[in-house]
Image 1 (tube, protein in one colour):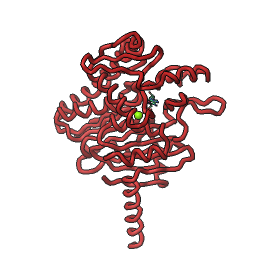
Image 2 (spheres, helix red, strand yellow):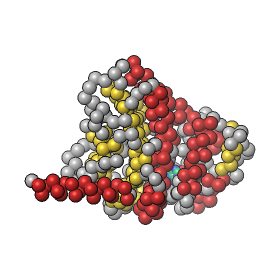
Image 3 (spheres, helix red, strand yellow):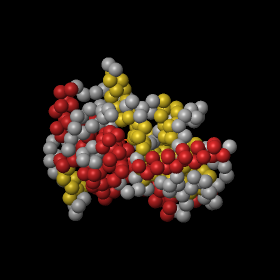
Image 4 (spheres, protein in one colour):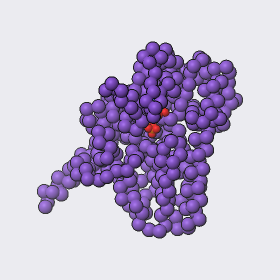
Length: 347
Ligand code: ADP
Ligand code: MG
């Protein structure tokens, strides 16, 4: 893996409305096809290279259909979704669900165990009391009562029946911290099955790259959370997943306090140590769950976890704007600094 670190001089680049900026992604040849669509409350982007236009179109259709399927299965905003059904009835007894949903809940619990509870889909027991668009938040008393329900151990999974039940009334789950990554992984698998070898799929802050851009790496930038029109790090990537969680995505400010969509499971309030966490790994389910987790954990605990995980790297920007790199990225950064120093001394 090789990364380019460009800090200041990219300031003049303008970035459009997503977490990640696809530098130079306007494609050069007619064999590339690009599609943007609004699904799952976010922008879905698909870029595909294939010599056959029919295959490209099939790929785009498959990805959009998959995003739509996952949304209909897992959205808490769709009353008929299986996730809504669990939230409504699982305290009364086991609710059977599709295998995909069951396995994603299982995986979410694994991330809860890995992150010591920083990632916890039962955050929604408090989370559902917020409406960021309408600037609605729960009272302190409501948070204090509902946060007692946040605990993934309140979920009972039956592997044979593929069913979920809740130990307590009032527990709610939400897969907003992992489902988009899952949908991106599913999409990449569909594209592979069609024989496609070069593609980009992104859903809001979650991006996965299949292969390269035909001989060149994809250049992906991470936004500056203090000024989301600017880029702080550029990474040339291939066959890799990148997710960013930022406090600038869904929020409102009241009495000088920022209320955003990533909730600290122990306080029931928005996590406040970090402004953005970006994670690199081989699949988007992992990067999505970990970007949310590391955001909650903060720089110290977050870096400690990143540094013991094989094949996972990350960049964290804390509240003061300080940048932290995981060990693997820091090494690359030093290397690229050294090579640019030696280049300039030759000149
Ligand atoms: P997005 O790309 O939607 O901004 P993120 O990956 O940054 O998503 O995760 C934020 C989402 O994760 C929230 O909108 C919410 O649905 C969910 N979430 C918030 N806090 C937690 C938490 N502590 N554990 C698991 N999921 C969370
Ligand atoms: Mg996430």
